[in-house]
Length: 96
Image (cartoon, rainbow, N blue to C red):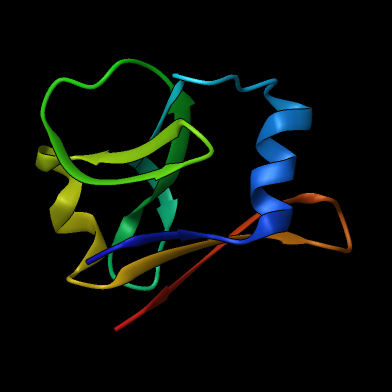
């Protein structure tokens, strides 16, 4: 399982969230909404320090991670983070 970010997504984080070297961005399972794998749960994202990293991608010295306790949400799929050109917001997809 991996976290993959497009160049557009990395630029989105720099512009919209003003991430800097050494920052941590967490992707997590949140209650509400839906996902391809779990009705009633959707993907959330926040800037916070990790407790127990399960999956991590370090890109341009920014740490994108999933806590070990949230790995179940991804159902052994890679998380693909991109930008939806129609609304300039992050988009998420999953691949095996």
